[in-house]
Length: 238
Image (tube, rainbow, N blue to C red; front, side, top):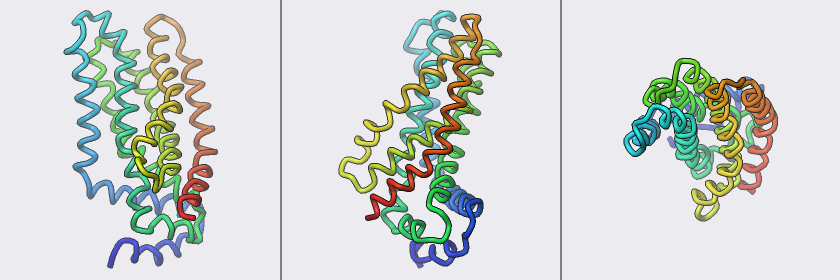
């Protein structure tokens, strides 16, 4: 029995918002764990990109500490972008998304579970690895802590905004290129405020404004994006 054929009984048993989120989250985590090689490639990409910059620039601690926040944030952004095409494409191809749209549970809740699974498998490992990799850039303990905090707030925004682009490009020719064109401009403010929080601390200023803006962006994205993604998925299915 195929995955698509097995889905309707399970989906029919998901009546509430919370259960719909948990159902999609658990399902996508199981699928991700079965394809550990893809997850490994994304994390290896992040580690390699971050580790190559110190070799290609000056060994000066001042230069490295100045470049570090931007490099770590840009690498996290690219790693998140690398994982976006698989967020909805497989489920769209095998009919699972259509069954989710027809199930009793709300489609925004299913989309929220899928986006949370995307962050747990791509964003959270980046947050965990960032302080270790940031040590290559001569960042002190305070800067590394702020870096991890800004990534913890900012990477969920990347997953949410990226999911919107992934849903809008479902079934489109050249979807990966189109996805990058849609998502990268949306990522720019997150990158600026995330890296800017660490730069502010390094300059002896408070990082509260940048972190507050990231927090406000996260709250806005959590509220609005699931409905936008659900609407885009319904359009793709019509």
